[in-house]
Length: 202
Image 1 (cartoon, rainbow, N blue to C red):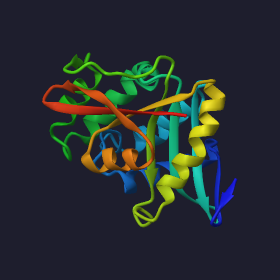
Image 2 (image 1 turned 120 degrees about the horizontal axis):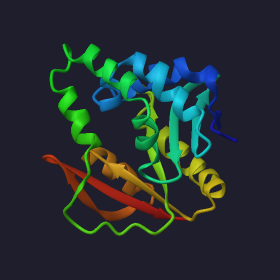
Image 3 (image 1 turned 60 degrees about the vertical axis):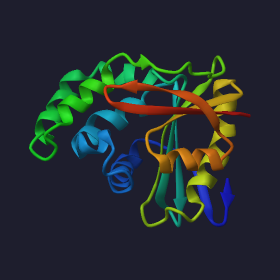
Image 4 (image 1 turned 180 degrees about the horizontal axis):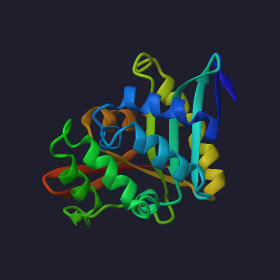
């Protein structure tokens, strides 16, 4: 599928190095990026690429990956997949703790049960946009919106669902989803952090 010389396709194992590089550049402050490249390369991407209920679409320009969107069958699915690889995750956290002293605490909070603050109104059987990232040099140029608008219908057909839910952790991310036809669905807290949910009805 092409648009403005952009190509969207499903990811494969040969893309892992490029995906790791992209994610660390585009989202350096995200928890997964701070867990380290080795975790992304040896655990995260191999695990989700091998999962039947996860879809990964890459956005290419001139055969270079400049964006990625990761979808899952429901919003807890990827977390449950990764929970089966606790040893690898723990090793990665410990190896990164000298650079990010509070990363262990953040991972613990991310894995704990959420405290419901406001009822989240998400349609039943919604699939989940787990991650979307665009190369930092291409952000703000419409690439993220193109990736999102093109890949969501593909994921909807795969999951046989008409609703997509996403979690926004920053105001910038929240605005991006609003601009792409997502609507507010409430929020929850984990520790002191608020996590806002939005959904899009296709």
